[in-house]
Image (cartoon, rainbow, N blue to C red; front, side, top):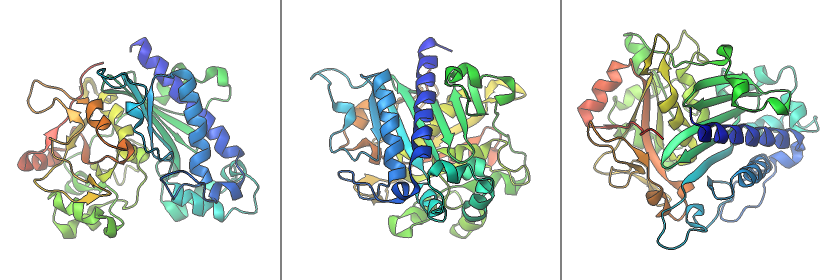
Length: 388
């Protein structure tokens, strides 16, 4: 693992701890109320307060890195700021989702108004059981969370996902995948704290059971926004199969990757996950897992496969394609057995607001041969990232 990767991992860990402290200190009334942000009308205090803490930490650590985040609603693309004419775009940028599953967290906290702060509600002994009864189990996966991913020279090098409810962080980087409770001592808040053998997570491989191979997790709600139609257009299964095979229809974004680990029940292993035409902040945090995951019994073999799904035509939302073709994709350089991909900063620079970029992606354990057959049948492209 390169020192620069470790440096950015440590930055992400500290930024997530700042977000956690800020949210826990926020009064419940403030957290669940709307907070004004230019060009974005649905931001809450529980979104904005953690984001402010994250942005401050990231800017202090690397003032030259761009930060792509939804809540600020900036009308100027951050990837184009402070770049002299004729020079290439940001060499390093962060993608940030300060509070994923914020709608669910707002409802949960509304029922906790007798308590003063978010921290008091989260620290309640029945917090996890109450959350799971309303918003899905296990809370290790379904809980409200914050996520930050670092992309350097077009390569997604590391991500950190903080579960606000369980108070645990998941790290994915070239050193591996790690999952552990927050350190009590800020002096221990670095990648070395997580790199203990008991914290290592592996991607669970699936067997040849047809139901396991086809069980998936994707967001298919909000038909008025085209999500059910988009997943049907992928042609991976018959329309009547989608509902029955979807393990959970309204999942969070960043933590969706964790359905492919042993945090998910062994009785119902998930065969693949999808980004169903969703915005970049939902799925960008999955990409470092592609580079860092290895099969437990053969660490020389990657444990995950990533595919970009596209058709000749695509639905649109807010002017952005739900299923971009390779011509419009931010993944550049793939297409044959030799080339490997990078994330195109040039492509993201071309959008007024890159946080609104959408894509349809599929990630499956390497052992899922049914998925491999489906993507080969439809000509969907596998994406392998270059080394840093």
